[in-house]
Image (cartoon, rainbow, N blue to C red; front, side, top):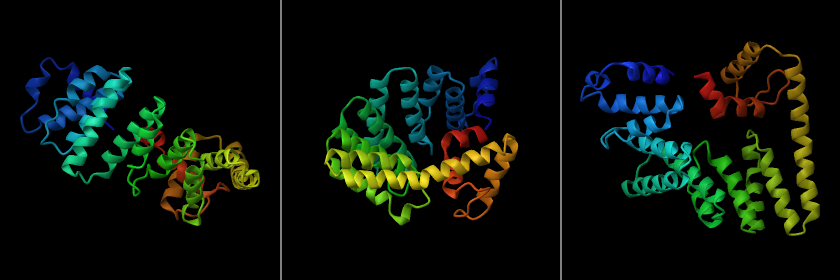
Length: 261
């Protein structure tokens, strides 16, 4: 949480390199890279990230950050090349870190999708580890890719698996849209209607309950307190009339976690 002020403090020093020992070099350069990225100084962040040695525990994270800096600077081709190189390196070294694998795979998938290279996007989406928090989101995005490839049965099948009781805790309205479009394209209008009815039944009610809660809870601090109360309690229990799926999704989102930090 202090990466940005740490970066700004060291940047303002008269001779910052003199303050860095050999033993602390990788730690400092990586924190400087992250701080610069969060501060929006992407060029500086890239310079620091590339100074992290391959002996550091977060060497792969630094390479991922370098790619994200290229993307933030508008050089999408370089960002994609760096991520491709990183993923190949992870594979060659058989790195067990599923987090860096998931982040690299899903970003490569999204870049390929944006470039309308749907075959390559599909391949990358399938490389997101199933035990990672991004897997469900990746599978929904994979469904959109399959629709673009006119693999309607595949898209329907993937969304159908997400709609099993096993995933009842997951907030996933978009998956019903993918499934419906798949049915429409194979002229299964009855199944399309049933899928939308399912979406309407659950998510309309959830939306109404969430709106009612927000209308009676204008204080952001009180809302944050309820988020903490949900996290402390049982994960499958609603709070304040709001379904637990909503609380779960809110509390796990990266934008919320970044703001919380």
